[in-house]
Length: 395
Image 1 (tube, rainbow, N blue to C red):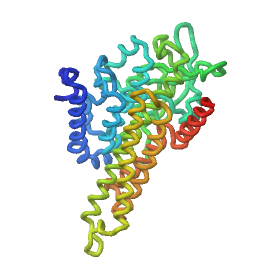
Image 2: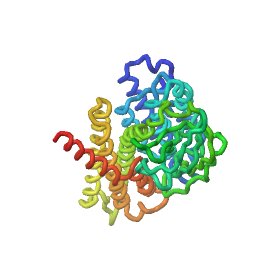
Image 3: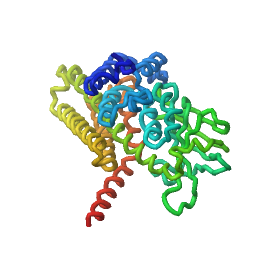
Image 4: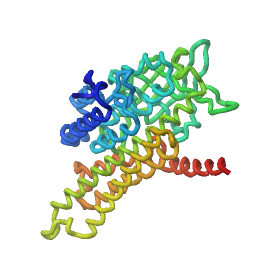
């Protein structure tokens, strides 16, 4: 049974999810991992893999079943992400925004009409949704947005620019964050708009040339007098934007943490395999105690990260913590993945620095995880500030 099978919803959730997870695991390890060099060298996800992703229902695994998705909750979402994180991260970028920061804005804050209009296409993969928040002067802090949306009769006129927008070259829908009030008396004056990618006045820039994650596609976007109707305002509420951004980003941080665990596990596996077979002076390097120590540190990080991600996801599902725990998980796991990647290169020695070796790609790919969905520094501010505010409230 595939996730798109009509019988999907008839099985018990546990049985269904175990089946889904097994299928994803096999797809990643048997179909995608052998083609990582192809993805890297061509800077493109092959068309047949794209189609398999669509056929498996991966564009909508976190979208509710009523809209055609699989309806996985955050605890299941992170399990999927740990599997997806085992290979080139560009694969997950194909459908990450549909399930995550873009799709969840609609799921959590869209009107019924907006959900009916967009979510079925997002869940099927017929529509790629792109989360247009980051700007040259506003990244981790959405309050610094310069893009504006000005009321004009019953419409809105959007002007501004965005940068580093994942899937912008392929998007059918932009979820655009813009200022509706430059000097709000309360709140941040930020609203969210659903803007079809073919709207007049939108210019998508050339694909970004990045350090790593070959195969993922991001670019800048310029909005010049882009006119949208009143029904484009998410939730029909001009004050919902900032809340939508924070909620969507917080959930996505747990997923990024889970992807980091998947990459860290892959780096560990590559290290163990190399240490068991490569020799120095006729002795397998895994016999050397300092190599064993590096492997031990990697294993410790992976196990700690996996437990932390699962704990944060449980806290989200039961509603006990939807702010600090996601930031803790992202901070620890993305920093841990960077350390594991560095140790993996060290275990490989000179071979680990060569293009085409898995750990060299992992070393470059994981660096981005500490930047998007809020930098490590922003996570520290969220954690520290949140704990202090809670203590002041108790006092």
